[in-house]
Length: 260
Image 1 (cartoon, rainbow, N blue to C red):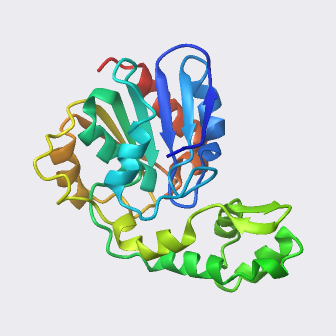
Image 2 (image 1 turned 30 degrees about the vertical axis):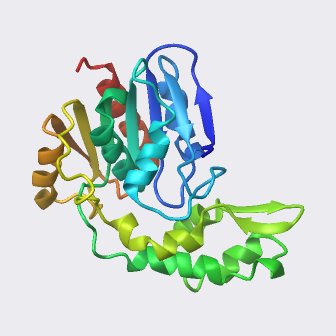
């Protein structure tokens, strides 16, 4: 399977960024440019997203294994993942620890999130959009507004709308993501049965205003990642790296510069 990637930087250890649901590798560009001053950087369009190919189903083991094919044990990576990308990064580190020198998990935990109605609503609204009737991106924004009243969220979702000679299309694999939303919000506990904890240095970054990282999640995080260190960034919600990019970048660069 072909995954679309973007590279920055020419020397130093390799840092790989994995985006969340409805995202693209380029979402990390601002932070990646700072990191690329002394690292090689790889931005990945995750399976089902961006310009990467679409498998016929979604589960974290499959996604993690596909991303793992980009790396080599001869050049282990610092792996950074947000939300969906954070879960995929955790599964990758657990299944292929020889590929991951250190791990940064952003605002997600290795648990099953039972509430998925928000994302189901976004997917339903995007699929309901009559793409053949669109004349502009503004038309799409207006059509989504009743179902997605937040301008910030609409702008984020509309980054996935592309116009070609054949008309408008969505880049994410909305049908499969919607069908397999339970897997996307879950955690593959059964598939990881018997898997050893990841013994590398792990940074767990949470947003103060986000509900995705709770104190009760700490036990699961420590069980899978015993060398975890948790940092909460004040004033940030779920999209920590875009809401507080300077603080996030400083925290990440300090982590990347530490010895294991």
